[in-house]
Length: 437
Image (cartoon, rainbow, N blue to C red; front, side, top):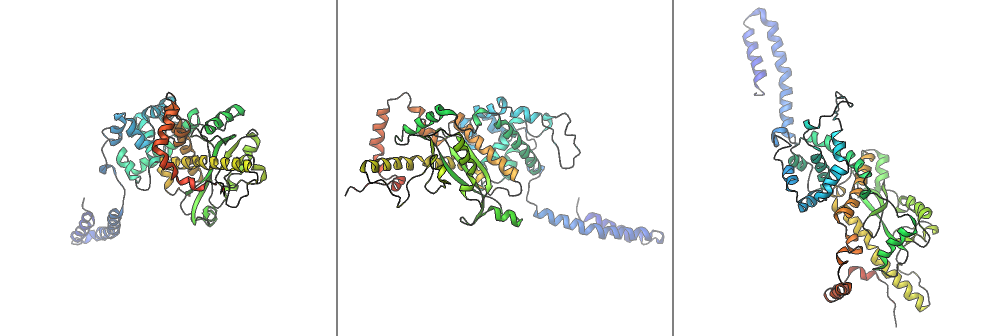
């Protein structure tokens, strides 16, 4: 209906009523109503012009029929699933069915902000806009989103209104985290016992023979967050060295490409040495003597007690033994250490490259939501490494594809084809060498 029609009708009607003296009161009332309604209608019309969100008429009519998500899910194509969600079809179905995501989604009763729904009522999953597979696809698409792909894309892909996307995402993230916490493929656990540490060290020594005792690599990861209105929270997240608001995390990667220890969601104003205190404490109490993790030369090792469990490359002007044999051993060890510690960089790049959501400033209002996001991404990283095989560390240190071939053939082929490349390796400039003159 024309927004100008109602007040115009009231005004015209009041003019007619004025001819009848008995209806003067009604005329005044009509004029009053017209004047009261007109500004509100004009305000609503102006507000509508500035609204930037999709409504149901802007989307496909039924979220369960012929949507882009339905086409993707029906294709059963591993390449498409990995590109959009980071998981292949088998892993997606494993999380959905064997993992228990489907049962948890179907047992959930939808609530709203009006509190007019009985939370203990019988769920009706058949009445929802998305089934369990759609909910899992929605949350996995969300984790893949980056700054170049806004959440409006989710509304178009799944044919959902913004409020429905927000409500479904919040609950689906909780369900996914609950599911991953019970999956052995997602577990974040340190090795136990000498045998398990030795097994990890064997993977490392196969490529770096001088790193006897090495079992993992460690590094810090800084992620941007929104600027807080609260002054105290703003100070806690501001990192003066990097001149930005962020949160700090410290993550330990095994040569199998798995996250085996992590401290997440610490204030950006904290130094890595403070963030890593729980890791230092854990290693002193649980890592057998003779084993250590490899770190960057800039990574803080804390006090002298941690020196046995954390090894870092030599820094400029560090002293080496005078004995030529000990010098050679120290430099050989340092060269392998510099090379292996790259795995921490590979792990961080895998984490951020796989989940575009981590490249967008994280929400500052809820520490719980940030923790949920970070923990879910770490769990999914392990699932991808174990079930999908997407991990640069795993591919380098666990070359399954070479198991049935003659290693000498591949080594000679590499020397022939990549010898010049190795001479120009960017990491080689950090290697220290002896001056024979």
